[in-house]
Image (tube, rainbow, N blue to C red):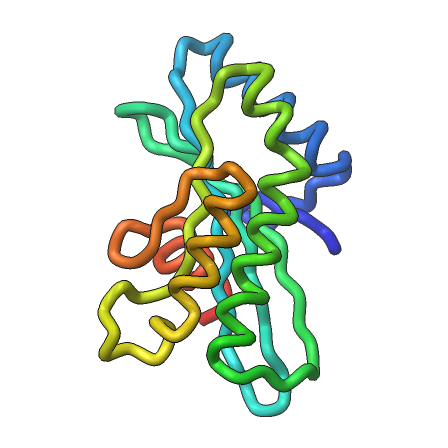
Amino acid sequence: MQWRRFNGEPIHLPVKEEVRRAIIRETASGYRLKVCIGTDSQVKGLDTEFATVIVFLREGHGGFMFIQNEKTRTSYSIKERMLVEVSRSIEIAYELCDLFTEYEVDMEVHADINTNPQFKSNLALREAMGYILGMGFAFKAKPEAFASSCCADKIVN
């Protein structure tokens, strides 16, 4: 699966190396970074499209992100789809977590799951939170989960 920048430019290096270079470049420029990883999905006919983002926040100076999309014909219940989103985010977070530790970059995993029980996505909240926290990652759900509910959401809609 190909990663790209927000402007559409493909990332040719392995994502871990590109993230390392971004951390080194941004910290050398004097920025304190925080990284938020999230995934959102959209069902379009028979297809389900997933977008995973790695959002780099420069404290007080905006940010940028890397994006990965994938389409599948697999049919999911709402709870299954929410948990697939979370597993995609955790997969990337796990791949990159040693970099964040090495360079002392705070990282959160964002789940596009509503904390309000009136919403269907709430069915997956307990499992998603347990999965993310159980992996040792900081967890955010809606309305604080902007990486998944705003950034990734813009990519799949």
